[in-house]
Image (cartoon, rainbow, N blue to C red):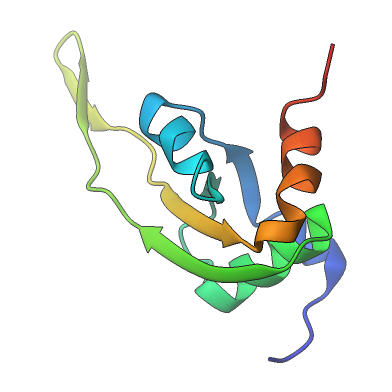
Length: 104
């Protein structure tokens, strides 16, 4: 794997996705993130490992179709996004959870 610039890696991951399905996947050490549509799996893996200081075992990506939206007579589309489901090593799960869901 080639080295990536850490300043660039921070821009790949936009936000975590917290839905009912994503919460169920967290029990299997899988976390869901919205990422840049042009990001590749090795870039996503490097970004998550750099941001959370964890070991990523696998990355699955989904590029859902754009949804059409309408405002009055004007028709357009929602912005394009890519979803990445990242599997984290079992011993690094607490690092991700403490970062994403801090205790209040």
